[in-house]
Image (cartoon, rainbow, N blue to C red; front, top):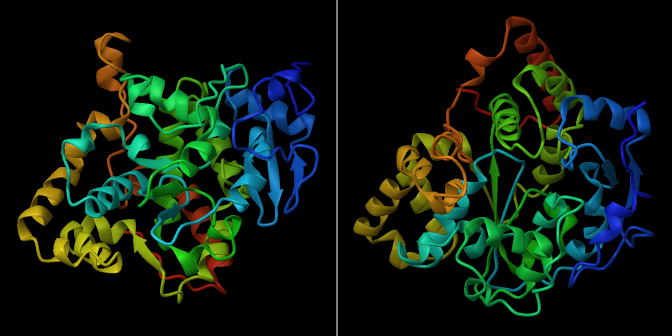
Amino acid sequence: MHKVGHESDPLIFRHSHFVGLKMSCCGSKYYNFEDADEETREKRAQIYTNPATVMVNMTKVLPPKVYMPIRFKHMADSIKDFEIRNDDILMVSFPKAGSTVTQEMVWQIANGFDLERGKEIVFTRARYVEMSQFQSEGAAFIPTAADDGVQKKTDDPMALIQLFMSDSVGFASKMKSPRVLKTHLPLTMFADDTSKKSKVLWIARNPKDTLISLFKHETILPIHGLKPEAFDEFFKNFLKGETVYGGYWDYMREMWQYRDDPNVKLIWFEDLRRDLKGTIIDIAKFLGKDDFVHDEEKIAKLVDHLDIKNFRNNDAVNMKPPKGSVPEEVRNNFNFIGQGNIGGWKAQLDDAKKAELDAWIKKNNEDLKIPIKFE
């Protein structure tokens, strides 16, 4: 039988002593962990075929029931203890709900629309707090979180991403104010006073398009070795809450409790795509950026900047490998940013899967009654 590494594997801990992270592998102040058993790891290894993937050795974090790469155990407490500042802007979303376009939008609004600084990759400007969980088990650790002079370290965007992945919590904590931060964790996994001290933008998307986008996203990342023919198994895992970050409805349930919080604003991806200008103005008002709200020229430029065609051609957000680092054909075909479609699931799902999804949605949304838009 093919053996899949687990928490006792020394590779897991080889680079686990992240600067600024409190180790919670041997006991957490806040959470319990249920590691995937050997049978589950074996099944996952059949669809995530690259040995370097972090999507095989998973753990369920309780509460609030999120499903994460096992390295997340080393940083879970540090995120709960992460010190939120009064001028922080925190964006929260389930994966593939439109967080990257919102990340760029919010950073530009907060910084008065600065296209020159916007040429820096978005992860250097708006930090992804728990990014370190995706660092490969054998990756080199670069202990550089003692300062935030990251742009002086390298101009290679992929090298910068690796740098952040070595200690994403540490780098986020060292950012100068005002900070724009991003997470795919529910707000309940941050400090209890987060929504009292900072502005929180919650980006949500219908689960059908989320499913399709998440699968496509994971297939384009070679490190996972996830093939298109694995969709049936991925579909089952999504409904069971065993894709990365766990169950869609577990996440929505955690976040729905904040729907009336004045410092938490819910933005539906479907509304953003239908009315980009209106969403920009709405977010600028929420953030108290009155000058931006009344600047028609900047708003028009930002609308153009975020148009999906332009956005997919923006290397600062699309994470294309640097020119010359890979064959040009490979570079041209790599798109971190999806099509941004609404209702794309219709062409991707057969009738049986559509019916199964509808029943799953009806069952899980029966008590929540969240007004989700599917078209």
